[in-house]
Image (cartoon, rainbow, N blue to C red; front, top):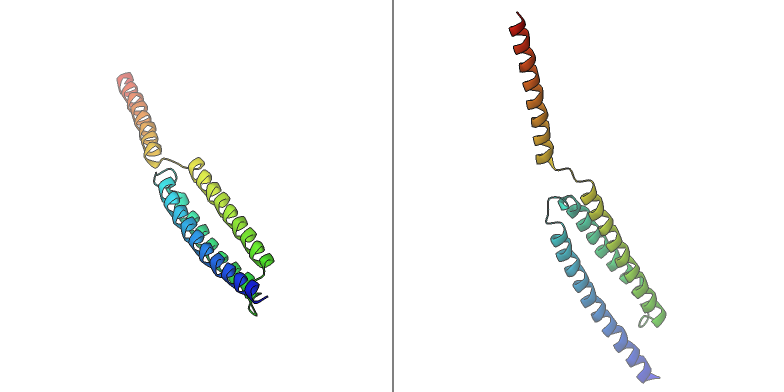
Length: 143
């Protein structure tokens, strides 16, 4: 039985190391992808919400790991705790990805190009000025 306990301790230690490495890789890739996808002016508004979601996800992930692995404080975490933790972590990561995608789509769809809007207003103002000057010229010619 002593050999099995040492094997379980080794498994828990390896899981902890692999979970940390996977977390670092996930969040590094997520930040780089967020920067790449929000580099245009159309999607730049989504950068802060995406980073906020990623930060919250990271904090929640560490909290979940502490809660699930604390259950095994008297000894190594049970296999059921480890499986539950992995399931919750992937659910959290999928929810974070879905939320980031929603924020990105919202920013892209609700984007207003202020330069184009300003030019449109200037064209309208120019047309009104031209029409008013033509009306004034017609009134002066009518006198």
